[in-house]
Image (tube, rainbow, N blue to C red; front, side, top):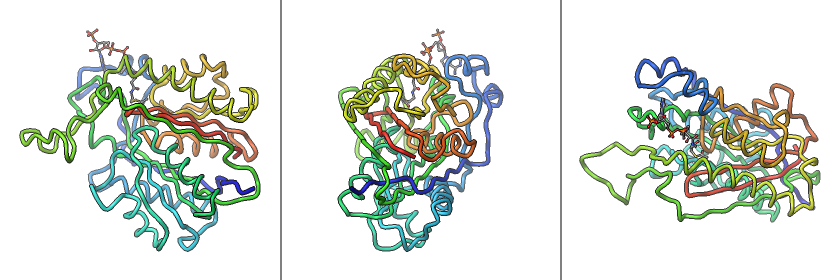
Length: 322
Ligand code: ACO
């Protein structure tokens, strides 16, 4: 049986760090409020000349080095992002060119905060059916470009960053199960009002910002993390005890703790990096994973559960052997 296995991982964070104290200087908020409600202490913000492709590229280079693969090995690139460089070409094509990769497919997947899991699900299916042998799955975002810095209710929550895994065909177990879902009914609870085709108002040119009903999103996110994790376990006839590490989308510490509690997962087995990175949407899971691996917490052979939830609403999960 062919599995797809994580052969390497890398991540990248912009150098510019903005702390809660820094935000206090520009908006009516406080370090205490942000920490209490979200667990966030700081976030990285891309420089003016850093784009989603720039930071995604650096994460990809690091992941390829970790896996010991070169551009000639890559036959699929998927970038999970809701902040692509341009309308087209896709950020994946821009990254492909910079890496010197040629010929294989390259595409962006927009599933908001679930983008990395969607990408993982797609790449896994390609590899299992022989459509690709070595894929890059990148989660990369420059959310600062769609953040309304005058809206304290959302501005304090988000950050920029990128993470990448190299997925390779292997006889050894890797990804055991993935699930992705969506329900478009709740569009207005978390969205960017203005885009390319819809509601483009000339008086607001260049102003496409995240708008959110925080309370409603919070409740939905907690319930969904629980459901998706249980769905994946049931699919494998598995139990919670089989999971060494739960790596959820890093939206907010309160959401992560509430989801872990509902799931009966002790926090000692939950990876949380939202304090350092804030919510980096599609980048948050590979960023958290890379940090936990580099710190020696997650080791080869461990069983991992990823779960994500984001605008759409979209949600998804993956269970795998690292
Ligand atoms: N600093 C200080 N005060 C603030 C701030 C801020 N940054 N933001 C809001 N407030 C104020 C509000 O104005 C309000 O004041 P009022 O009582 O005088 O009206 C008060 O704080 C409480 O506001 P709420 O919105 O009710 O605060 P809540 O406890 O719900 O926390 C939060 C808000 C943190 C956004 C919470 O709803 C949340 O975490 N929601 C989840 C949303 C999320 O993480 N989304 C990310 C994208 S989706 C995803 O990735 C899963």
